[in-house]
Length: 206
Ligand SMILES: NC(=O)c1ccc[n+]([C@@H]2O[C@H](COP(=O)([O-])OP(=O)(O)OC[C@H]3O[C@@H](n4cnc5c(N)ncnc54)[C@H](OP(=O)(O)O)[C@@H]3O)[C@@H](O)[C@H]2O)c1
Image 1: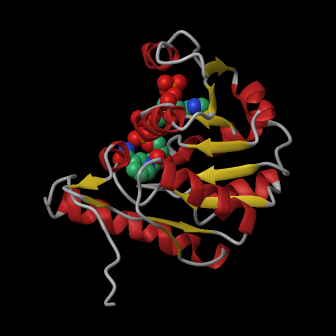
Image 2 (image 1 turned 90 degrees about the vertical axis):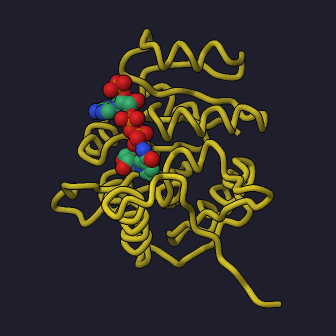
């Protein structure tokens, strides 16, 4: 797949590396083509290129948005028409919500009219995305949204990043729950000082 990654920090940079290994073509959508982070990712493989946000978004089939929530409005404005593409929202509104919207997914939906929008890769720390293994056990990922196509793509990309399962927690009405779940992880890891090497996995009796 051709995947545009908008925001190539902890989350975007980590997923770019993971998806490069699976053979996807990665288009970094960035403000500064010369930054050290961008140049570092470019040096990894010929499968990665860096472009202005508009070009990366237009060329891609799938767009991952992983910028601070406050930047969501600028990003959606810069992407151009993307209603037919799959958009994966990995953001959390830590601190301030993107008002008047309750969360970034609602802001993206309103401004892009995207039909294949899904929230995924937001519910755990970037270190767990870089390495989803705890001993021999792979942790789980979670996604929410009403687009089956969006969820199919997110589930595939989650498996390729090394997660055991990508559980579908429901439609658009469950997006806020998934963001609250991320805040639950943040609360445990940071406020309650459990550290960032903690993760969730669904256990099931046979
Ligand atoms: N860190 C985590 O463990 C974690 C876990 C789950 C979800 N998240 C969520 O993922 C998102 C990104 O977090 P992160 O830790 O990866 O952040 P980060 O390391 O600070 O990276 C943010 C990226 O966004 C870009 N950016 C900022 N403002 C922009 C704008 N107006 N237009 C275009 N690009 C812009 C930055 O580019 P420049 O270099 O040009 O500034 C940078 O590449 C946040 O919403 C966060 O809540 C983070």
